Image (cartoon, rainbow, N blue to C red; front, side):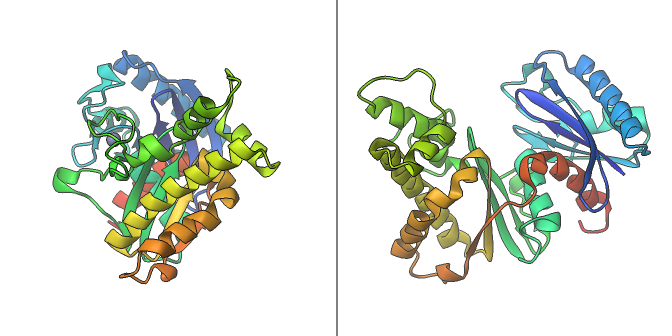
Length: 305
Ligand SMILES: [Zn+2]
């Protein structure tokens, strides 16, 4: 039974996950960006409570965290939106409290490992996991091994440039995939083209309107699908993977985007066998990050690494 900790910019989820990837119990709390030591105490309390609810003893702890992390040192990196957490050795701190082995990865990598081991990516050896929600992230797993860059760096697929004249991005470029195809980009485009302005509209609502035939919503969906397709086509040209597993809130409306995505891929990926790359929908649902955190432990200590 693995204690799983999923650390996001706004919330922390803690749970107990069995060795087939099933979540037995789960608790949530808002993230306090400033106070790291209070957060560690709270996470420990939640882990004990989750273990009690699941009638389980925690035999290891896996952590998936947003932002740059140093998986080898087991510490947070330069997480600019969690200033009090920068450089903190979370692996050592939790290992001391629970006296078990602890492993840490970036949350995109954690979810990629989970889909590769327990989810939609199970039967593919070269796999790219892409999550499209308020941002775009993901992870790359080849032959069961997580792809790591220099010094263990996590590749940032959401920051590939799609249009250098596009909107400014926090990474320094303009027109990154994330700034054009993440959920807020579709909402911003729709709002700016609507003759009568609307204060609150979600991506989900735009997709529902498109399904009912609303012309502007359909245009927003077409534009979204074009940008999703361009980014995915780049990944296919670069890696020619067996499969790309699609996840995140925007992909809950994948049926609206897929035809156009396939058309974009066909129009440009002519020098790789793009038709052999399968686009699959993630199968672990909203718990993917928590399940991923548990998978991080199995990946590091379960004899697969
Ligand atoms: Zn960027």
